[in-house]
Image (cartoon, rainbow, N blue to C red; front, side, top):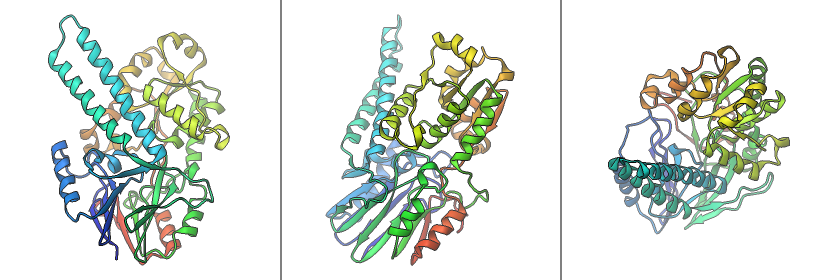
Amino acid sequence: MMKIKIHRGLDQIGGCITEIWTESSRVFIDFGQNLPGNGKPTTPEEDALMVADIVENNEKEHQAVFYTHAHEDHVGLFPYIPFDQFISEGGKDLLLIKYKTLLEGYEIAREKCGKQRAPDRSEEERLEECCRRTKTLIDKLETFRTWKRTGRGDYPNPIMVGNIRITPFFCCHSIYDAHMFLIEAEGQRFWHTGDYRGHGYMSKGQFLMLRKYATNIDVLITEGTMLSREDKAISEYRVSMEMIDVMQAFKYVFVLASGTDIERLGSINHATKKTKKPLCIMSLFMKRMMELFTEREGNLGRGLFSFSPLFYTDRLYSKLRDKGFTMVVGPSQGDKVKPLLNRLPQEETILIYSSWNGYYMREEQVRANAKYKEFREMFHNVVDIHTSGHVDRDAIKKVIGMMHPKEVICIHKEADARL
């Protein structure tokens, strides 16, 4: 008989760790780092001890971790896992791009530091340690085992861990290549949704998939991020339509958005093409993510995920000033954006803030990471255009009504949230 233990996630958003086991085998679904403002902040040493305590208790002959997607609050503790780890092909590629780009940045900074007339040895040592630590993470990621996303209508290939059978099903979320899991053993069927939503471009067919395959479910483990919020999520298509209106009204448009959210980048891409503005970026990470999305998904949605951005340099300034532009940026790029912003007329320039508003409105989030608020405050004109990467209350009820599970466990939710 399969058993479940939710180590973390019942009373906080993120930091998820779910353990499912039989007499001989066990799997973990996600091993996530706590999000800023959610759960107790921890040091790397505390994280390592916590993971060791969980892993060493209830050890089985066969064991593995499966990751629903590559957000840090689901995959962030991967360095401490001593056995097999599984993630989708796209999720692994995304993480490797992230850490390899970080490594390049550290190596360039270390080299510059070493060439200074009076090198700062302590800073040089710090950067050397950052390089060493990041290389270790890349080596660990290279060992991840993966599954290939199946085409629409095809049944995914299951993965066996001892006598536990795990089948990954693609789902729509605010990061590339997220998955749900059907977990089966000893006549029982559990379904773990991970994080998902029903209002994105890639959610088409998702409810039909659930209706077809999520049957006879004993336990449904579902996310509940939006359970404490009454607002209903708008569609990703509507996000794009609202962006078009703003891009028509302003000549110079900056959009603050995540570089790992293929669908939000698709919305921006569509709006930019409709308004005939050049799509621009300033980040090497953003460039590499767009290349990955174009290579893997460029033939979908009539070019929605086929990106051809211009990489901004001062040499392009005069050309872009005449034409106008859409510049996709992240909150850590304030130092790059500010010099350009100072050269542009305020009345023709706007920021589309396309991230969760809690990052600049909630005090605990601002204390944890002030960059979102600081970036927003650089602009005279700002508009919020966003939709959640998570399923809303009505859609959760719809899924439960379709599945008719014998039991529902709600995780990835605020402590006072209820179905």
